[in-house]
Length: 435
Image (cartoon, rainbow, N blue to C red):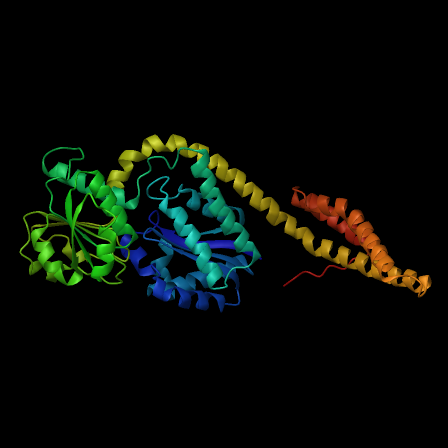
């Protein structure tokens, strides 16, 4: 049995590969069902974000389990293993534990210290529980990863002032606008005609950051007008014109800056669509959706400039250096949490012996209790019987307390193994390895 994680992220794969691996909410249950049906996978959960897809699993055999997960990813993406393999990473045991702790802490994010990833890890836990695909091992690991993320944010300054994907997208727009004016700096968006496509969580964050960077008016497009209007109502100081997605062509023609952040599984803007648009000169399109909302064939069209999430690295790198020093504190906390989990994991080695020892002593207790009670005769009251039984249970628990505590205490695996062998020999226990 082993803990393993297999996946890919912004560090290992470009957006055109990541979008093929993305698992939407409509397909997540089917993915869980397929993974749970595999004999090599005992427990499993899925983390799917715009920058990563990772499968966390408790597997029967490391090699076989990893192979099966890779096979699932290949089938899901439509990419052959040869195409997919260069972009995948896999970690096992201590490395897998450390990876998920770092992910939850925001240490593996494109934007170092981003807070959004913690809510995504929480969602991974909830999805695993809702789909009944997690057992005691992953439940313990992933809930501890969430608490690690919270601890890092409360005990260090890593999350203070950390930018998100949405704020990085707004900064990218400011940077590109500045560069077009011959400046290598972020400029105000006050004079830009801005449209935001998508009224979900990412759309909300985009609007928040646009407002903070000088935007006073924008157009918000969504599939349903009701949701767009509900979001607009939360920004009373900002003039927001809500429109249906059907009006996208018209908005493309009147905007100078368009942000897209929808959950669409296929591009909603492509070259053929833009060719039919009478666009404002120099229309900039910034896409933070994965799968992408803007097709790659837009690149190179005259009068249009398109960017996706991979282009955010340009602004992220400007802020990263100062945050690296704070990240060292967070890494230390992550190491502490990893040690705690691995000590608990190691202690499970003693569980079969402890259970068998407890069972044997319990059988002896019951047998001797019955002998004693039978000798007491009918005059022995029910209350007195309960007192004697409680006494016998208390004696067994007292006897077991110290050896059980010592067997489960943090220690080298080799030392624990010797202790277990001694206990099994002294009490003539026959522990059968679980399959």
